[in-house]
Amino acid sequence: MSCKAFFDGSSFLNDCGIGYVIRDAGGYSVCQVGAYVGRGDALKAEYLALMALLQHMASLRIDEAVIHGDSRTVVYQVNGQTNTRRTNRFRVAIMRMRHFLLDHPGWHLKWIPRAENGHADALATEGLSEVRSKRRRRSIHRGAECTAGWGRAPLWRG
Image (cartoon, rainbow, N blue to C red; front, side, top):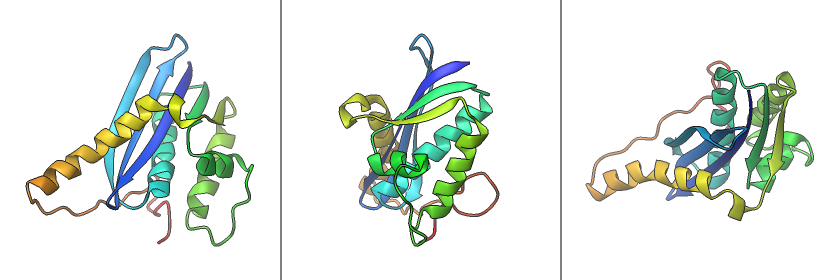
């Protein structure tokens, strides 16, 4: 199957939401996801969104895809267009995603302007709505531990 995919991460008051959309060659939505993924900043949310999308695409056995994201930092680092310092807190995740893309040679990661990524952005924001509504009701919330699915090691350090 050939497709286009879009991902985005969102953060508000140190809570992270992710969103992604997978569309078939005709432009029809195969799936769309918006989810709360725990505590962190906007960059962490972006990496988690891309990781979740890659895992979902692999489970669907998608052969060819152009994956779009509006975070230049994430796209360029995962593509190897920007150097990733050894001290980068996301280095392990970046390297795992690079290897994941190498294992799927029909997948290509591409940067797009934010204005072209509205659907994934809306889903990421929707992922935050659950925790926001809990705060309004004064519920206690504890962030979830998020892992890559390539073992039990967390995607990031810090």
